Image (cartoon, rainbow, N blue to C red; front, side, top):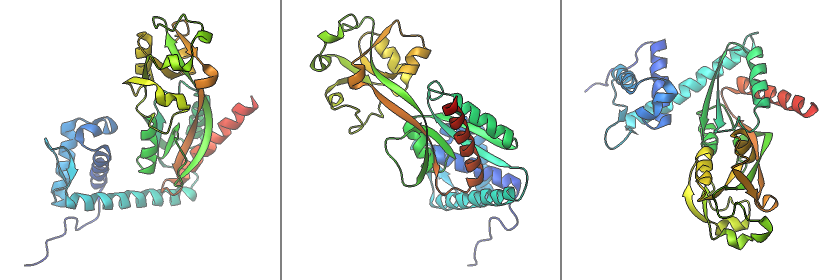
Length: 313
């Protein structure tokens, strides 16, 4: 029996690259539905694209159904080959850009949720400078959880992330940007709201319910007392935690800027600012080795310039 005819006997066309990019996004997202927002396409359209790619390659690339989304063995081979191909295209573009007066390509940024409400001036200024210097580069911004930003950078789903790092990573270049102040808040309606702080001790706090973020894993506590707090609710989004605190049934930590921006100062008061308050430092991160290095370096230079201007003003 002879060998099977090659699925791609000729050159790759633009439509092939488009289908492969859709396939990569679906795999990165973990399924068709999860990729809808990223691709801005309906589930049925994405399904048609993958079916077209499977027909083009004469391969079954993935399984989808009640059991969830998974790659076939052939799908894994095609996905790895797709990563290699797209990286080579980016590398080619960067080499051409270096010898040309114009910069082309894409810059995918990932922002931790609510980051801009903390301090947006240096980010806005950096994007302004970057868009002026490289107007032909297409910019995409995705908002996600703080830890998800780091994961997305490490897995090459995004080029540059701006987030709070739990620790440093040897694979990443890190640029500190700005700080946010985190405070323990109590809302009106809570039994402690009208109690003078001198009449409250850390042991008494343990009698009350707390809301916390799921990302506050064991070992990340800013103070040893936090390990003893009665965590009865978890909410990833800061506004969701604020809602629970405002109910008067929970204590919890929020960024000071969020309380100010939402004009909640008259409904919340901080407790033990010096004891339990701490500072988060937002950082710009990117992989040390990245095929989109030229564009990433230009954006980081714009970030540094905006930071320097802010320091001098």
